[in-house]
Length: 229
Image (cartoon, rainbow, N blue to C red; front, top):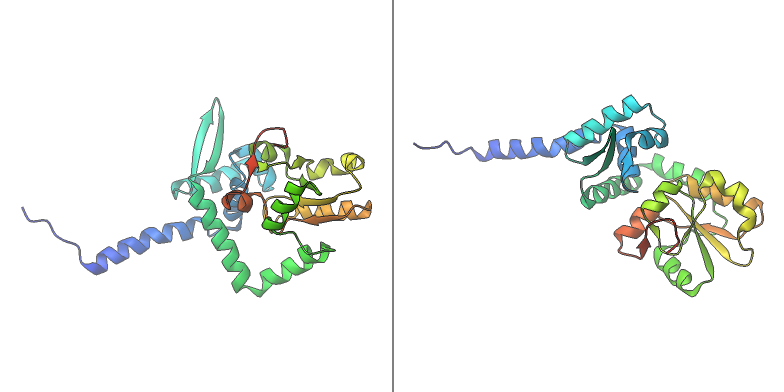
């Protein structure tokens, strides 16, 4: 029995239809934000809902779309469901999407300049510079993300003071070293807010130009758990 071989046009249409599933999956700002959050590590739906300022029901619905597209996977622990990226390539896809938007849209550049650059007294620190200076011990690396994100993974040697706790703990930071704060990525608002707080109290502080996911993707030293190293 002879099988019908599909034409080249049918094959191409089928392929592009599958490619379009990814586009449809990320065609919503909150789903893109969820990918950004999951680049930090595995999270429960409740934590994701809180971080993305959505209801649990809406977060579950958005995650379902991402899961059905193959971008997100799940793990059940008792009655709780935890979400994670399907693999590291998904985080790479998010980076590419974000960077393309920065390159193509003037509105993104305006937002970055008005919110992020306006809060920098000095140039942000690059990954290579931070790696060198941290090894020399002349800089304090400060992770201002929520503590569960620090526990899941952080820059080796960084200390954890979530932004919400910084005001209460700021007096314990050393005055004789420059502080470099980092959070989820180049467009995360936590580090710029930390800089403002530190500057008001007279600390020398800069922010990492990127964030933890980019540091990890570059193969630089990371750790997990409650301790800095």
